Length: 335
Image: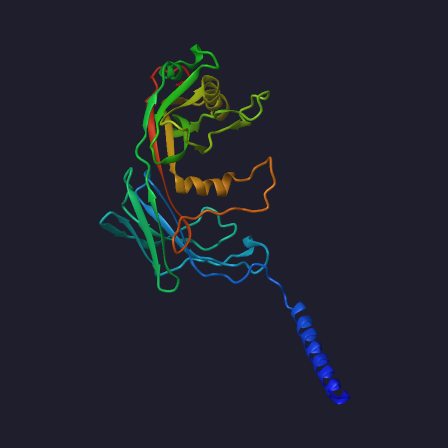
C-alpha cells in the first residue's frame, strides 16, 4: 500500500470517528426519561360487598403525568363504551354506565364515572368473574370469591357488662365470639353504641364507636384513642374480639357529658359490626395502606393486581352485625 492509499484510509477512519462523535454529542443533548413508553391497558377496579344492593366497576386507562408529580394529572381517564359483565356460574349480568358526584373536588372537578349493577347483592361463598371489553384497549378482568357468612355471638358475661357498666371494674372484658370464614384473609371488628338525642324539638338517631384503647397509656384523654384496624386472620376459625368496660364507659360519658350536656338521651342498642376481607382485597390493602414499615427503609413500592389483561383489582368483603338491645332503664339514659 503506497502513501497515497494509506492517507485515504486514515482520512476515512477520521471522518467516521468525527461522525460518531457528532452523533454521540447530539444524543447527549436529547432529554432522558427513565419511565419509558406507556403501555396502554385497561384499569379495572371493583369491590363487591354484601352491605349494599348496588355494585360498581370503575374502568379507566393508565396515564403518564407530564412532570414528576402524579397529582398534577387532572384529566378524566374513564373509558366509555365498555361492555362490563359479571358471571356467576352460567348466569351473566351486565353493568350500565352511571355518573355520581364526588365528595372531594379538591383535585378532580368532574363527576365520577362508573359502571353499575342494581339491584344486586353478592351471595356468600360464591365466585364472581368481572370482565371489561373495550374496542380500543381490549379485554381485562378478574375473579373473586365472597367469604362465607361468619357466626357472631356474645361472650360470657358480656351482656351484664353492657347492661350495667357502672357495676363492673374498668378492666372487665366485653367479648364477642366469632367463627370466621375459610375464605377470609383479614377482618375488622367494630363496636357501636346507638342512641337517640332530643335536639330542636325532635329525636335524632346517632351512633358512637367504642375505641379499643388510648394512644398514650399515661394520658387517658378521649381525644387520643385508637380504633380497630384491618388484621390478618388467625390460624384457627374461632376467635374473640374483646373490648374493655373502661372504653365502653368512657364512650358513654363522652356522649352524655361532652357531646350533649343537658340534652335528653336514650341509649337504644349495641351493634357489633364484623367485616371479612378476602385475599385480593386484603393484599391490595396492605400495599395501599399498611406497607410503610417504620422500622426499615424501602426504596421500592410494591404493587398488587389480580386483573388478567390489564391492571387493577376485583375484591370483595362481607359486613355482618350482632345487635344487642339495651334495657329501657339503662343507667346512662337522660330523660
